[in-house]
Image (cartoon, rainbow, N blue to C red; front, top):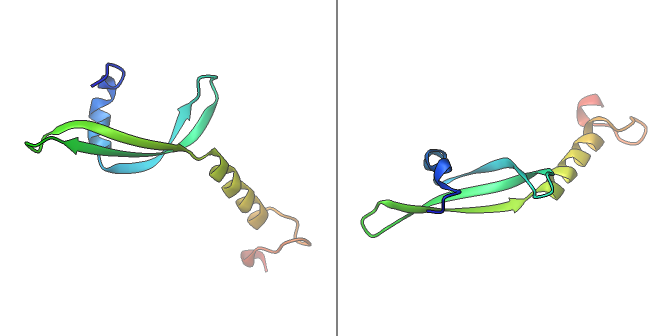
Length: 86
């Protein structure tokens, strides 16, 4: 296992076969949301040999979700009327 991953070992065991959203940081320091899925890979004896993580930048999706929420709940009543307010 690469040296940079070893400190994450206990956390990875808890996340094995898990998925969720996390915040990550780009090389330029910008913080952004990611979708992360972690799966334990087992050897022939059934022991976990390593972990595989797949991630995707979901910044665009989060921005769209925020826009939709704003339109649904904060838009002026003359342009849009949320169901709860009608």
